[in-house]
Image 1 (cartoon, rainbow over the protein chains, first blue to last red):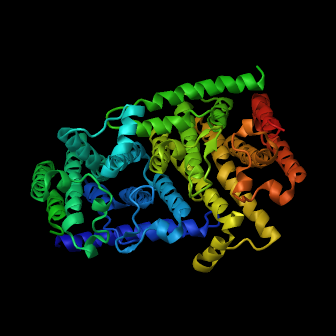
Image 2 (image 1 turned 90 degrees about the vertical axis):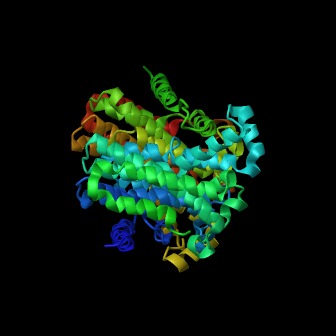
Length: 302
Length: 302
């Protein structure tokens, strides 16, 4: 089976599993269920849950033991998009060509839909991996990345200075600092969740520690490459493909192309992908799909 | 020991345990740690974690097994206050006489501080009770209560109609409906978290199911009484005690006094307290502190 068919099959499994989590009962207001579904079924690629399932399969696990956690990871990803889009954050009106949650339901419901999805994720995931996923998605992971992303936006430079004065934070005051900050943001905002998706798939398949480590290393590298390639697409991709072209530019975001230029950014992504494949050796031929996926991440749209 | 001393001792234990969770390391931006601490150490009574600890003790559990989960519950409570205070929600500038998180740190950091606290809560709690706590705090619990609270505010009546048309929700269109809605809001927004605080304390002490049930029943009743008494204090309490007098009135909130009047509201709270004590019989003399606490909840300020 070629990669696209494989991903499409896996996506169907994830989508149909996700649907089961959104039956309303009398304890739950309709509006919040509707808002959560609106964002969960907004055309996402399901990259993270698919990676989680593949990791589990490669390590010999049973899908049925991994699917709830894979769905939980997609809920966390979706909550982060809803909150990132809010007026106080990136202030985006559209995502993938559809109105963002706060434009559709109002800010209050959007905030609560995010809170609800994050909480539901912890309700449904396997209790064995709660700590791993909380660490990857919290202030030492994804939330931390989002914080730096927000306060490092060029239009917020004054705010950063305020922070360094009041709270001991560091203003971005040199080229080297800027590069470190950029890597921090991308690793934490994006790579940590991709890494943990693979890691917990392996853990739930009872993989031995060195396999868990290898697949986590692979995940961190493709995760960073994925975000670098997203930065590039934000500039050169056409609007249809991302549905939110130029949002980074509008918000003066620190991106790989803005710091390294497009060519060097592409090279960095390709190097990461090439290194990520070395981590897969321990899995032998079973990991071919992850090799293809790694290539797909940088080649997908340019 | 009298109740006030007892509570003050327990509060010290909770405060000192909470402090340990807020050391910054290089993975975490200073500003978000500062914002989370600002709200966590804003003078809360620690009612929920204290109830969790007491439930554990009464059921013969060891404090050290329960403290992390008790702290996690306080983090969830704190995140809910930060998000509730946001401009899109209750739009409060002050809480307990101090600036709210978004007034102090800006809206983006306030939203992320809430997200960070919710996530950290799941990182630190005992994995055995993750599902219970997620259910009580999510869209079938606290978040659900907050949703109804927001969309039922009198100034949002137009919004409710929009919801009933578009999403099959129900507008508040009769006295009976109004009362049901009010009870739904208070039970879900407040009582469920108080109930689960006691419940998981008992679970972590390996209490037998009928004791877990009894202490949960007690918790739901004092939880509702607590919120009714808060409604009353919002009207008659002095500003010093709550630091946010009249916020409900400003926001046209559905409250017990606004629906039943102050005297009937007081009676309802007292009846709940009196019934809650019956649930404690199974614990014998060990539960005296919970009886006193129940009385304290309705008597504390009026």
